[in-house]
Amino acid sequence: MNWVGDHIGDLLSVSLDHLRLALAPVLVGLLLSLPLGWAANRWRLARAILVPVSGLLYTIPSLALFVMMPLILGTQILDPLNVQAALTVYTVALLVRSIADALAAVPAPVIAAATAMGYRAAGRFFAVELPLAAPVLVAGVRVAAVSNISLVAVGQIIGVGGLGYFLLHGAQSPPNYPEIISGVVLIVVLALLIDGLLAFAGSRLTPWARVGPKAGARR
Amino acid sequence: MGTGRTEGGGAAVNVFEQVIAWLTDPDHWKTTLGIAGIPQRLGEHLHYTGLAMLVAAVIAIPLGAYIGHTGRGGTVVVGVVNSFRALPELGLLILLVLAMGVLLAVQALTIALVSMAVPVLLAGTYAGIRNVDPAVVDAARGMGMREWEILLKVELPNALPLIFGALRAATLQVIATASIAAAVSLGGLGRFVVDGNAFREYDQMAAGAVLIAALAITVELLLAGVQWLVVSPGLRDKPRGRRTRSRLSTAKATT
Image (cartoon, rainbow over all chains, first blue to last red; front, side, top):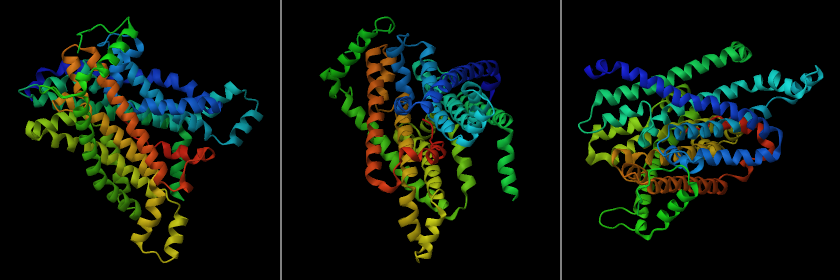
């Protein structure tokens, strides 16, 4: 445990680095997938293209996608941007489908009522449809955030991995168990922390969803 | 052979040509002087994946079916699945290989892969059985079917789309995790990526990545084909069934 005490500063600063590497793609991916998900719900053709393509991208294992990024982006092999771009791809691939499905699941009478109240398409999207899709959106963002936090570590195999550094560095012989375990524990703690924060934020954003199930359970 | 090219930027076409050249080099398709070729690495990858999926299916599908049928322990399943999702696969792999020793590295990898696959399969089977229309189960019971007959002849066939969905997600995750086995000095297609990185041979690295991606996509398409053949036509996803599917699709696991 001496190792942990001696390296507490490193552990904390690399943890912050890890979070930045994992969460920046979630934010960028969310911003990209909102219009894409909207388009996939709006036009049949867009859906017919976007949903299979995102399924295909989601199929590619992380290590392969990290390494293939320079081929697509023309970046340097060890550029941290490769890992970020790959994680953004996963986030978009995950969210486009669920946003399209969530928007499709908004009941037609609700949309008709909003239209009757005078909402134009854009206002209705942000005031009515998007909030109703929020629970699915938050669930998708949680999955993306948690899996990104775990996948960043895989990036260390090609040299960009936040806390993954402690996993591979500690595994060199002779193995340094406190170092590896610190890395694993911090990754799990970060994942659970972010998941919890997002779940909390999600329930604040959708107060009606909090009331619903409870009222149902009381009956 | 590797050209030792480290700068990938700039001439993207050149990189593509290098990858194709690497992949079509006959030297890379045979094992010579102890240097494993593509077929051997592919074989290892499939071996790790197949073994882990077999063990995981034997554990998770009966257990998930039992829990789904009786409804007992459902909350435990959901909790276990969510907590496993946070576990970093690389860390689990490294700790298991170190704990069990290099001689048992393949077994350690199998345990790591099985523990990635079991939660996904368990959740999928459980959700599949729970989502079977209760009226259908009641009808089967009313017709005098025994409990095990209901499970085998009614619930499992009806749950197949979700079970297959979980099987595909778990297989992809296992293929992905097996490709990082090279980081703990095991084989598999990830070897090309790790060795290419160590020797600064980007052509080998990128070729390995292409092989891994091709394997994952091929397996996914094959399993989708098997699912299409096995699942009853009455349960196939129809475009107009979008609303019911949206609820189920959130059960998809991560890679």
